[in-house]
Length: 536
Image (cartoon, rainbow, N blue to C red; front, side, top):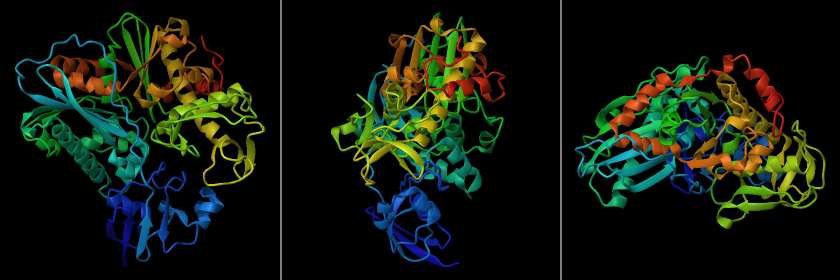
C-alpha cells in the first residue's frame, strides 16, 4: 500500500502513513491534539484544520463548516485521508482552566507513622484533566501541584469514545495506556522540579479515577464497560510497585489505585465520598460530580446510595455548536437583560469570546428560558436576536444577527436539546436516589458540587431549569476537586484505604437503566422548569 508523509505545523512533526490514514489518525499517532468530541466519527464537526494541497469538501464538511470556512480551506480532519504529501496546520491550543483546589473535611484517621522525610504523589486521573499533588507523608502538607489535559483526549473526548477506540483499533488499549503512563511520569517530574527534590524521596503514589480510567491504566479489557450491563472486570483496589505499573519517573515507590464501586462509579467517586465524609454524617447530603457521566451520591440516615447518570458531554462544551473547554476566550457566564438586547457576556481571561464553556452553556439556557425565548419544553421562539438557518432557529450571542461571519457565536435549538438531555439524566438520577431513600427536597441539608463545572456554575441557573432539586441556594456548596482531595487521604493513611475498601460494599449502587421509575422521571425532567412534575 502506498505511503505518504504528512507534516504538522507549527510543531514541525511529520510521519509516514499509508493512504487510508486520516489526518486525525495521523495526528493521534504523534500525540498531537485535534478537538474531536465524537472520536473521529464525523458527527461533531470540531476537528477543523487547514491543509495543503486542500481536498474537495465532503458532505460532512459541508454540513459542519460555514461557507466562509470552506472557502478559506478548512476541512474536518476525520474526513480526509493522506493520499499525497500533505502539510497540515493545527489550531493553536490554549491551556485549559484546570481546577486543582478542593475542600475536604478534617482527616480523623491518623496518617501512617514511620514516614519521616518521605514524600508521595496523589493523582486525580480524570477523563479530561490529570492533576497531581506532591505531599509530605509525615506532616500531610502539600508541597506542589501540577496539572494537564489528559493526552488520551486525542483518541476521543469522552469515556465511551475511548472505550470504542480501545476495543476497535489494533493495540488501541495499549496506546491509551502508554499515553497516560507518560503523562503521569511527566507530572511527577514537574512536581519534583518545582520542589527541587530527587525522585528517591517519593515512596508512595495514590491514583483515583473513574472505572474506565482505572482499567485503561492497568491494561485491562474495557469492552464490558461499553455494553450493558457495564460490568467492570475489577472492583477492588490495586497495590503494586511503580515498575510493575509501568511508571519510570520514580524508582521503588508503591502505587495504590483506588477501588471501583460499579461500571461508571469509580475511584474518583470513592475519593469524593471520603473527602466530604458523605457516608459518615447525620445530615442528609446530596453529592454530585458532573462530567460526561455524573456520579450522584445521597447519604441519609446512615445509608449511602449512588448512581451514574449518562449526562453526555454537553456541560463540558462538547456537542454544542460553539462549545469549548474552560480556557481563555470561553464565555463562562451570560445575562440577558431583555430578548431584544445583546446579552452581557463574561469571558475567561478578558479576551475576545471564542465559544461557551459549561457554566456559560447552563446560563444561556437558563436566561433564554427566563426571558421567554425558550419555553419549558425547550422550544425556541423567534425574537430580535433569533435567526433561522439550515439547522433551524438559533440565538445570536455575539456578532450581527443578520450576517453569517466566522466570529459569530450562536446557540441553536439543537444545543438546547443537548442541554435538556444532560439535565434530564442528572435530575432523574437524583430523583431515583431520593425515591429509594424516601427523601424530599426539603429534607436535603446540603448539596455538594464536585468538579470544575460544579465549581463555576451559577446555582440560580441550575435551579431555574431544574438541574437540581428545589432547595435554597445557600445549601448548595461547591467543593472543588473533591476526588483529588480523596486521593490525598488515600496517600497519607492506610486507614483511609481500608475505609475505601469497605465503601465498595457498603454504598448501594442503583442501576438507573433497570430502575422502574427512571424512564418516566427522565421524560418529566426534560422540562426546563424548577420543579418537574411528580417531584415529591
